[in-house]
Amino acid sequence: MTTKLYWQDSHLTRFTARVEETFLREGRRVLILDRTAFYPTGGGQPGDTGFIDATAVVDVSAGDDGRILHLLAGDPPVAAGDEVSGEIDWDRRRDFLQQHTGQHILSQAFFQLSGAETRGFRMGDNVAEIDLALEARPEEIAEAVARAEELANRVVFDNRDVRSREVTPDEAARLPLRKESFITDCVRVVEIADFDFSPCGGTHARRTGEVGLVAVRSWERAKRMTRVQFVCGGRALADYRAANQTALSVARQFSVARDVAPESVARLIEENKRLTSRVKALAGLAAKTEADELLAAIAPGGGPRVVARLFDDRDFDELKLLAHRLVAHAGVIALLATRDREMARLVFARSADVAPDMQILMRAACERLGGRGGGKPDFAQGGGPLVSALESALSAATAGAHG
Image 1: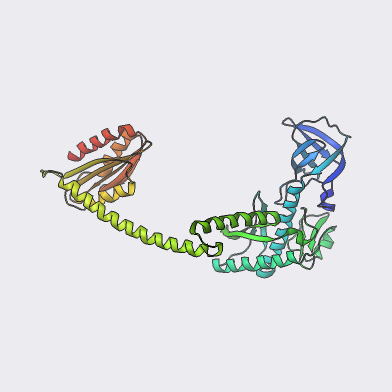
Image 2 (image 1 turned 90 degrees about the vertical axis):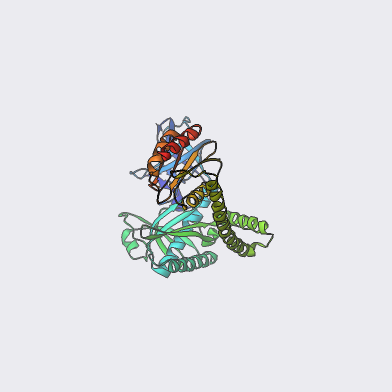
């Protein structure tokens, strides 16, 4: 079994060890050492990276036999019995110990304030997340999240001691552990002074102040639980900088101070709603006028009036609105099309007193366009990528509408 130096000191970045075994895996050297400061992936925490001698360590994993496997970037000349030097990527380690210690603090805050147990923990490249056994109304969850974040940061700012020690299962049973341990031989317990006891094999801060800050970014309901995304320490600073830059950028667009930008955005949204409503009303009037002009240009005849028109780059919603305005008149069939360089689109409609089935005409036209279409007997829409066939497809539909 590999001696876990990171259990003794999560801040240890350099060490020496002896190679116990080595082998190749897909052209890369794997080393098993008698001791290591490299944390292997597990418990929701990614593994460390760094160097062994001059070769990069790209992955670290734990074997079923308790030995830790170090996957190197290549195949350096290393043999069993050799002494090697290891160096941990400290920036990566510090990031992970900030997130992991912050998770302990935040999970205990939720447990103390809401009785919500943490059922899952994952640490990604940008955010960490916990799954909580918390079911409530959205406003109640929002309140619970705010209270837990507040308590977690009070513990961080208190700069409390963080200690770890190995105990027997019997000793662990007498401790107020936040979660149950299923280890039967030796339990490593991480204690945050006067706040939390948790069985954990990860890397942690020496004091809570090292976490810097616990910031909840978002929460959502997931599988009858509440999933909380958060950032700590350096990630919290990076997240603040990004959010602040976004807020400042928005504020500059309105020529206002950052803190009043939301009011300007709200006014713009309301103004946009009013303008959108006005545009729709005007579009309706324009479509009615255009429909009347198109129908007036058709000479009276014995059958239905067929309006077949092809437009370039016409907005499809406008096209549908024009079709509705046309067939609001009696005895009308509207066969409208629009095209750009990549797609041809069609709208076929008829008045209630006209017989042809628009679905049948649309399916035939879309076959020519290499696309699909559908709808109802009185209104159908579709299209396809064969833009060059649009004129012939519309001509065939016009012939079909005339019967």
